[in-house]
Amino acid sequence: MAAAVRSGAVSAVEVIRTHLDRIAEVNPAVNAVTRTLEREALAAADRLDRRRAAGERLGELAGVPFTVKENIDVRGSATTHGVPHFEHAVAEADAPQVRRLRAADAIPIGRSNMPDLTLNGNDTTSRLFGTTVNPWDRTKTPGGTSGGDGAAVATGMAALGLGNDSGGSIRLPAMCCGVVGLKASHGRLPSDHRVAGTEPTLAAQLLPVDGPIARTVADLRAAFETLAGPDPDDPLALPVPLKGPRLRAPIRAGVVADPGGFGVHRDVRTAVERTAAALSDAGYAVEEVELPRYADALAAYGTLISTEFGLSWPRIRPLLTEESARHMELSMERIPPGSLAEYVRITGERHGIVRDWMRFQQRYPLVVGPVSTQPIGGPRPRVSGPEEHMRATLSISLNTVTSLVGVPAVAVPTGVVDGVPVGVQVIGARFREDLCLNAAQVIERRFGTFTPVTPDWKGKQAWTR
Image 1: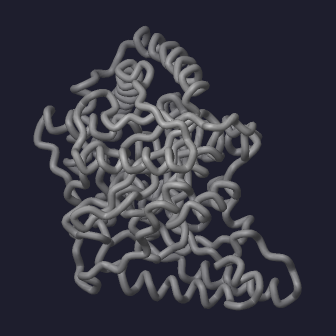
Image 2 (image 1 turned 90 degrees about the horizontal axis):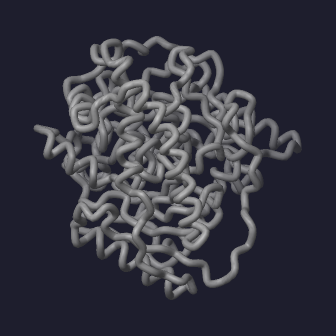
């Protein structure tokens, strides 16, 4: 698309109008795009066309439309976080990731749905914008919490989606919608996670990373290479080379179908096993592994989150739907907030867990495992009690652990089972996104791509507020 715009084979205005038409066609069925940025997007496209006509060289992503999650700043647009409290919180400037994409001449075309303050697990329901459904099957979730971006990209409403991931929130929508998503290393991509000017606490500095969702690995790589690098708005973003040292062949890939031993659905296990076979056929040395300090990592993650949320819970609780609040209350019941001494101890323990993972990944620079150990659930999963909540939490525990240790992962689809996508994630050593993307490319070549998809109930409203 960008090459066609740069060459003049198609105008940027045509690209944007086509995608706006697609949004009008399919968004009523899935409710992924909360607001279009039509006027601004067409004006940006017109400027691109004028620059090309004047002989100016355009950027690598010229004219490529992308959606932006409701918790990432786009200048002139409200950053609502999905709740009425921030409905009129108009951003004065772009977040670093939006600024990066604009610098490559990509164009933000719309905002994308998310759960209230990202606090409702594997779901995308907000008080402001209602429920996003899966474009493959409206009885299924598109994943959370970047489900709006996953559904928008899967249906062709945008070429890229910009979301964030602190425990699977890019990888889950990618799996559920049959697209690819990158959770980058901690410190790899710049971001700005201030909320209404308030600086993020320690867990909010260490766990969430902004990142792209795309339909192909090549597109994901192009977005990653555009987004990576330091930025003055993010003191944690580092100037790390895009590619690491060449590793001696064969590259070892550890395989874990049932991380933590909590149980795995047969279709998910099959997807992991088929992926392992594909990588083995491509020359990787594939071995089953046991991941280091898994239980310790889950406990540390839970304590960091519950302690920090426990301090601010009286202020946050009134902003949420009952479902979102119940999700967090069950989380804090399962792993209660810690004392100051416990919180400080856990910050040190996390350091040791990261060290042990780095040692493990000297031998296994890649790990293949599930995004979720269970199949895709309903669009608004009901959590009735502690046992159900624990099962849902443990099904995505590999996302939690890899977010805690700050390593990269690419979610990639492997097929469609019973009408909905299945997929895996490829986890790399820190700052080895290049290895993840290379392996994901092998997987994509074996199994193919599955989107864009058109909802077969298009024109019918399939969501509720």
